[in-house]
Length: 368
Image 1 (cartoon, helix red, strand yellow):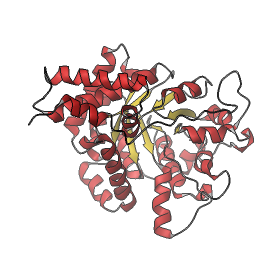
Image 2 (image 1 turned 45 degrees about the horizontal axis):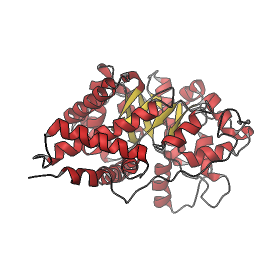
Image 3 (image 1 turned 90 degrees about the vertical axis):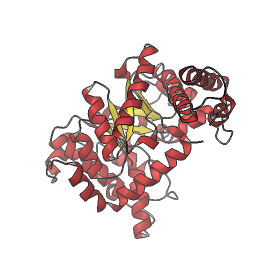
Image 4 (image 1 turned 30 degrees about the horizontal axis):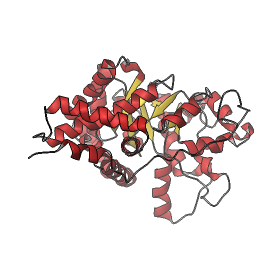
């Protein structure tokens, strides 16, 4: 089967997605203009990552000194491929050239999957390299979501991604490899962590996933409180919750408390936010963020960073505390095996449904 190089370019440059980079005029837009805001108060007690692949947006917030890390996902890579900006077009062209060099000498590669896989990973690394130059901390780069049930192939792709970064002069301690919170993805992290490759277990919707990731020695997890809330609202028919009673907030606090009680080093970094009280309530867009203030780290998209910039610092109270939450933890430190994980997972309907939904969405973006 032949696969034209032009087809690779078309796949990576689908016009269906594009970045929108709105002009932002707010008091957090630069360190010289910064006034005290909720974002500044939050950054005092929680490490902040920006959830964006837009170079200009990341640069703008990095200049405030409040953002240390950056996270990317297949959506951001897809957007980079379709941006139309000359900088992103150069990333795509370099990725295609790199993939062609790796897999074939001319157009008409005999193994299209291999060529496209190299191009996808290279584009993610090209975007990651730009972000590393902007933030002082770590940048997360995701392993192909389609490998989430294959430990060996996930490990192989992760090593390849790290090798690309190191070839570009970027140390592996600046990169987090993102892996989905399947048993196989978590076991891939266990292997990689032993090699000094730090991992971010993403698409975490249950305590079970979090406990397994910590026991595997994962550097960080990304639980999604907003999507957990979505599931519970659908089940109960409720329009909203008080932020402190939000099921997503409670799930993240349980994970965080378990980590602290049993002295796991795994960082809890929630992502993917929803308005606890409902979108119609003014200021509710940052409900979950404020309810989890004090957690180890958060990754936050630009619109919610803007919202925090517009709020008084007085709205930020520490709601996650390592000592207090550890003392309140009632979960035993049960040791999970593949068999016990599978048994517990069968009873976790929210985790099952939201993990599948998230993986399907990321797979669709990867295959665009």
